[in-house]
Image (cartoon, rainbow, N blue to C red; front, side, top):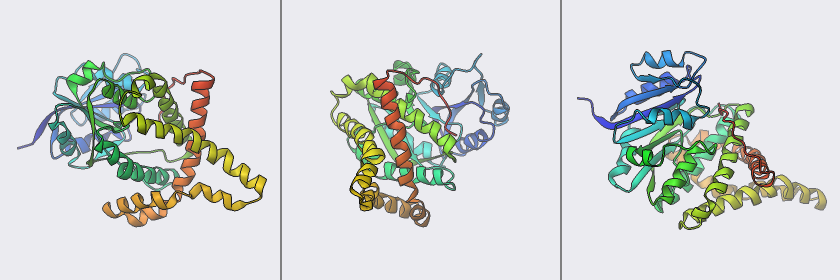
Length: 343
């Protein structure tokens, strides 16, 4: 007899005909199957809806494109009557027991949301490898510490589960920022709810494979972070530990980015000392540890080691985009509100 959980899965999809079949199949093959799978065909111009319907799932098509992933998810939320709601991107697949493992977080009635471990599905190009290392560091080191204090910085938009009653109480996913998952996570903390990170619930999204798509994702993420800082900072100051990790993240985003992009190269030129450029990798031994640990656990140590150098290149590009976001959103007071896909 099939084991089923009282969960509705929402899959927002715009022109995802090439990937949505794998996403649906990974959901249907879970050790604990969701009660219902709902695909929001957000006015796609390809065969996304037809592909989804061929797998016997519910397909909803708004009268016009909602303009964002949050908008598509909210369109489907009105149809959710199950105790729990899960949101997953249309390019993301799950390990066979991911829903079962993620569901375990809700044994605590104060938990409003839970997220899992994210690993890029493909790790071939420079950009995919860089994101792979970034995720290994984040989900092996930072996220478990945040979870210990019940304050994960963000319940990842590519794969998270929510208490439906609380989610609807919050008004679903807000469209006021480009990082709706971060906005919802911080809003839940402000209401006194808990968010959990379950490392054994693993998902595999398709991450940007070239600079064009990576730049779109970095721009959206950077502006989304700054927009949420502007929106939530007063309330964040009142929440212990969350205020600390956000302060550290903000400090790193601004100061470290300035050092990488300007201070180190200028000092190297002025002082005629190329050894100052070693500052770009001064923390390599520290971040190397979680990468090796995760590589061993996932039985892909060789791949992790070979991919490790690419992380430092991505960090430089990320520095540019986060500084651009702070300058545009804070100094120029211009808000980016166009949602562009990052793959």
